[in-house]
Length: 182
Image (cartoon, rainbow, N blue to C red; front, side, top):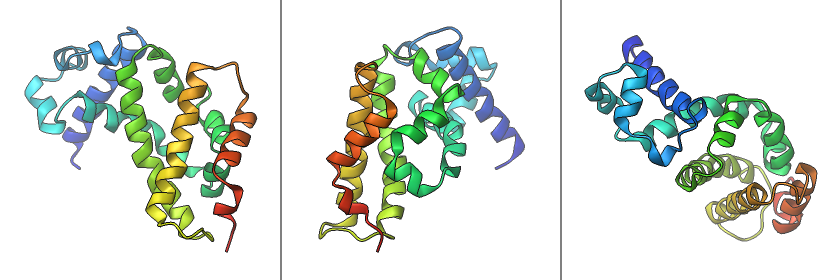
């Protein structure tokens, strides 16, 4: 990717991020014009790189999540809440999530992105594990859906369970034997 394109994409992402975190504007209320104005990027340049603000958000979230994939796969799969909490605590991703607590559209987007990113992760793990007689992609979908459902429950009930307890709930729900090593 050429330097100008990368620079424009980063300027647009930083503008969206700043609008959501510094200005505390909900993602659902932010317009492409606001993003372009904040990033000092022409609207036509925005559309050269992104179809809409949802694609920009996805791009930005994937940038924020890059270091997460350095956590060993087994840890991300078997104890997703403890490790995610360690990753997110104090990060820009955490700042973004906290700033958007009341924006359901933002969380709908995050669930969609999470499902896609985490399903690839789960599939990689499943392919190296002894699994039950269920297609790998269905098993990965179940695994990730459970993680997302628990995350949503915890977001709405933050003082009900610790991250360790969330991992315990998760492992009880997904049958520990699904991911036993071969």
